[in-house]
Image 1 (cartoon, helix red, strand yellow):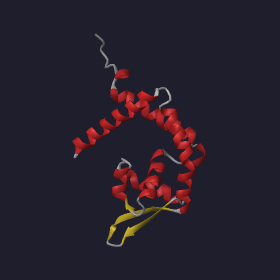
Image 2: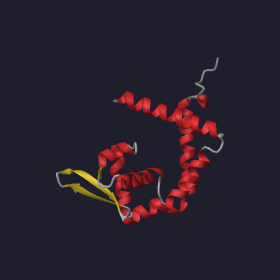
Image 3: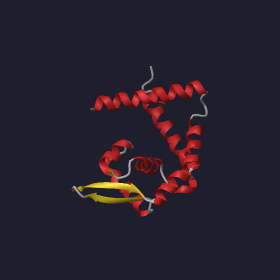
Image 4: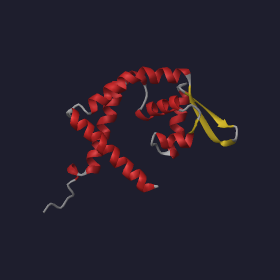
Length: 147
């Protein structure tokens, strides 16, 4: 019997490796844009819901609220997002994409789509659907359990 834990087949290890590969492929395909996957997600979410508050948006893009402000700060510095206090509650920060931020996100769509295709390229069509269903079920199951 082996003394060590067989991490190479453990779901947590495989998910971590898949995430590393997904980020690397994303960064290769979007190299000219200077944006991370989370920044792209934020820009897209704000295009759908302009004026979203910072806490709600961090939940929507599944990013740690404690460090979310620094990501927004970097997007502001690039001129892609603007942040303003909510007139009804000055502690609450509301966010919008700038016209430049929206242009960047729209220009990135093709590269991001190519990255998504590359990520699942080792799988056949049926396996791609199955992977999406299983990952969705895994995430939703843990999100529901946390509530």
